[in-house]
Length: 227
Image (cartoon, rainbow, N blue to C red; front, side):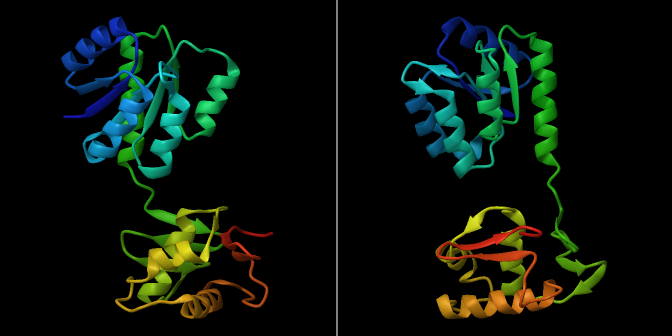
């Protein structure tokens, strides 16, 4: 059974929407404010399949809830709001919301949009790419321009982190936290430098002038094709 967290302060909407969703076979938990929503998500993250989220909440707003959800979980979020202005729509989508439905909405349309979001999330992206590098996460293979290249367990884990965070500056501390036990061995700051060098030697056309994994001076590294 698909489990829905409904974050809404209008009691009439809570009553009617909960009843409708339950009749459609969904399990529904309703909370009415930002604080209550964040506390519930913190305790029950693994039990939530989808969040239906109002923008206007009595003790805050849905944008803050969405930002926290997207920073710390993989739970999809659909905004339900009477705010039909372009700013609210863009803000919600920029925060990573998976869909945005203005009130009043047709219940059947809501169900259809919910199923579309859930269907998209159930099909993970199993091939990650950067430039001419492609990683099939199901088979664990990495290719460069169509030809397989061999990576150590730690190099593979390091590349996976970069491919999952394209365009984002990753600090050395974060990389160390992510990979320290990937190969069953201790990794310190010096060995991280070594593994970055080794990975570049395998995936870059010119390791001395990397085009895929860039050093961001004083901050860390960023995976992005070109400068």
